[in-house]
Image (cartoon, rainbow, N blue to C red; front, side, top):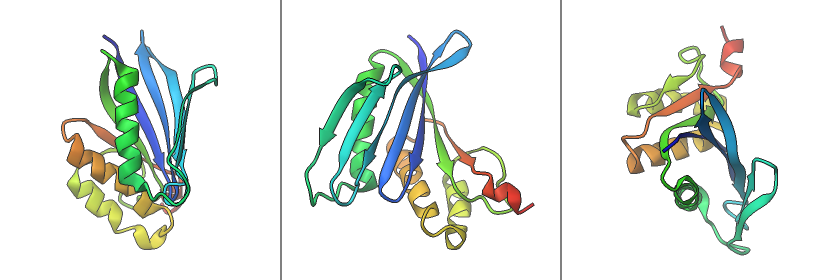
Length: 157
């Protein structure tokens, strides 16, 4: 049984993901992809490490899948990909950490609340970055999550 890590990049209309497997002492990309058009015409596509399409699904025009629906599909897909392997953590891209967060941080409810204070500084990105983190904390509370705060917070120092 191998260990795996998922990295998510949630935006306003898409969720991008990469699944990495621990092979020896290195993380190796196993699959990557995205669900785009979350509120208009959702489309899921996954590619293997060679870039070949390994899965694809469309929900149809006018479907409002949203972040919650996208995560439902993505979690089911990743469980299938993992088989007997074990997911040990999720990493997230977060746009703004203000002066408080300038490096990766293990996420809990208090961290989410603190990061939510920066929504006025990045109103198009921050709420969408935080939504999947909240949902996954509710659904998979035992799974460690880390927010990687982007460089914009480093500019404020």
